[in-house]
Image (cartoon, rainbow, N blue to C red; front, side):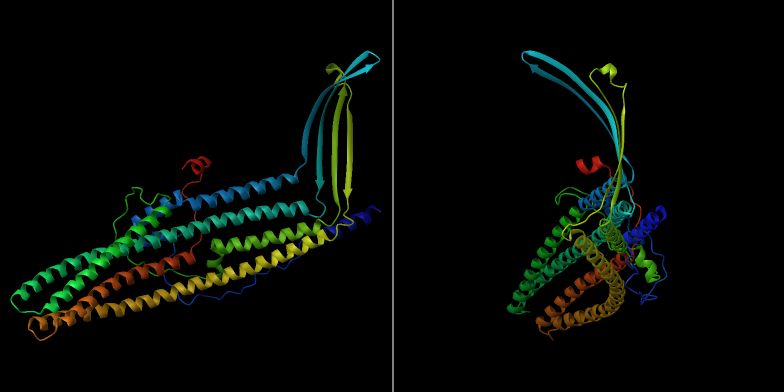
Length: 461
């Protein structure tokens, strides 16, 4: 009989475990389309050798409130895992009570005291692995939240870098336009002087005024962009938009050598968002096991020891010890437990598909960044040639105008083209850095934070 019971327990225990096939659903390529030779640093932004950018990112990782929220979510998940882990151990409670009873019997009042103390313990024997699976699921949730924190840090560092270099580009545009405005003002003075002596037409004066008005409008627009990007950067740093904060010099970093993209399976396995998605799959699989085991009997043991007396001096003279084993087998629940098992299976399937989609998007991020940087470098090459030719055209057009052999409209067209190309150069340099930032973000793993968030920092910052 004992052997039969043991065999039954083993069979049911096997039924209670998750039997899901957790083979990863995406077969990755053996290599990315391109690869460089430089090592990818854990803190990817250090590759730019830009001390100002590094300081900004350090401030953001310390003070940004989105990162603090991710810290809080991690602490919540870790607390849930610790709470679930306590179910692996017996619970022990102490109890004590004091009472007084008065009985009035035909005018005769009798009073009695009652006192009791005791201990009670309970423990569920985890026959089918239900408790263990729930604990593992919560622990996996906590690990996933830790990866989410790292993913948030990578996204934040990239957002700070993108915003900073956009701010640098906007500041350079303001400087360029102000220089052009000064040049155009000087030209206007010369044209007005020439108009007095009849050397130029009134239309030339008005065209120059129109050019000046357009440049002043462009300066105002560029200055507005600078202020908005400063506000955006300050919020990323966890500061008020108008708060005083010393920003680094407005300069672009030199583009570092292309990093090694490595083997996709290794690179993507280091990405926190991919790791988090897979940990969510494992947690969902454990919850399938919980739901399945919930359909089988539960065996628990309850023990208690107590002492009752009317006088405190007699309280510990007599003891009562109880040991009870309870087994509960669900018989009918209207299909609730079976439906819960089906729900957890559907959640598991969803998590697998989320993981597959995350992997696909991760591969796309790398390939997009690689091709975009390659095309951007080609674009800059052609743009540089265009600027060189435009300079020659501008000089010759101005020379022809001074000789009276060309209309001033052609000079204005060349001037406008010159300013626009200079602005395009600034934008192209910024875009090239942005593509590299996106590549670093798509390849980045996680790193240890410089300091742990303390609760008082979260509450009082």
